[in-house]
Length: 200
Image (cartoon, rainbow, N blue to C red; front, side, top):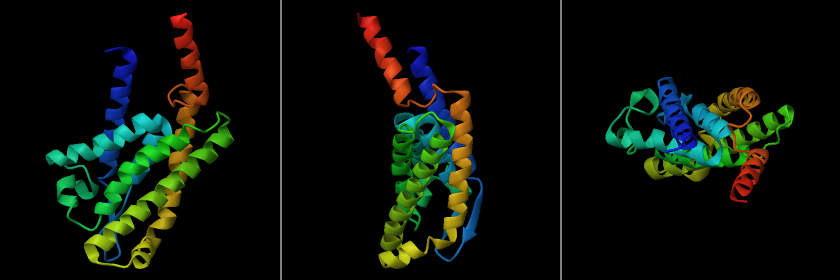
């Protein structure tokens, strides 16, 4: 296994662990059993910093360990215990968010302000995805109407926007310090040029 693959696996595992650790912070809100958590911030960070493939795989790994009864969700519950509950839709939303945020983040230019703006946009798209799938889960588990389920996310909006901005600030700083970490357009073009030169 080459060094690049080892680095990828290490980063995926590290961000999956970070997302799990952030699940230790859970504040109950409202009457639907959906807490305020920092895990969605960790997922946004993984996508913004690692991109589509590695960010999505970090989220996938974070969820997968819960299938073997390892505590990985909010309040240190394993995924298996959370699946029958009303948050099941948010869990599926997490999986989609990791890939989508990463895909959008890879399109960001390297200029600091523009990159930050794209990261914020990517994070907000991730929040919308989580609310959408979360609302579907509430419809399924609690027999709610979609509109009512969607409105139930209102108490989380301000906190989630703040988390997105914080994640974008952190990711922008990391991207500046490690410009080759996120597989953006310039990075991919350089790698293609190197691969073509090696074949010549």
